[in-house]
Length: 134
Ligand code: AMP
Ligand code: ZN
Image 1 (tube, rainbow, N blue to C red):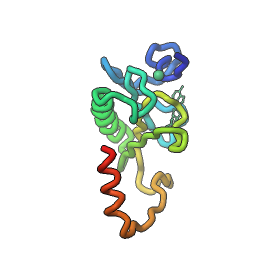
Image 2: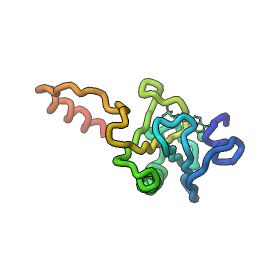
Image 3: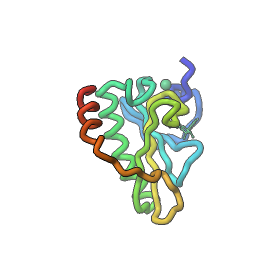
Image 4: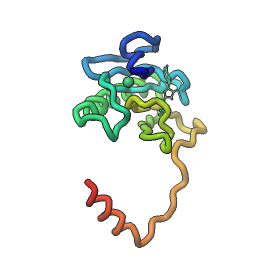
């Protein structure tokens, strides 16, 4: 399969590895949005969170927590964002499930959170509709 992240796991493409265990792998993002921006991936190929197994989702989450604490300590960061894209509409560009761990500094000028809109009376209906699809 022609997947760059599978190739990174196999060592066929170089990466700056931070951590690896039986099921997960973490390495520096090649185009970081802050110092220490890391990607955490499962070793099994899944397109994204929506199709990943529950087991790999949980194992990735565990590694994300480990990496988030490590980058915060390393860069003396004030905070950490955990970001993750599913589908091209959501900005996904590599189709091997991955989670971004992004160290943040107070007043670093990054605007990762767009402005919100006020939710109206339709909220209760939306909550019910989503619940039906669980
Ligand atoms: P996304 O837009 O969420 O799919 O993120 C894909 C991320 O993978 C981007 O932030 C890229 O900079 C990163 N990326 C792509 N190729 C490589 C690579 N060879 N090594 C490290 N990071 C990569
Ligand atoms: Zn892959």
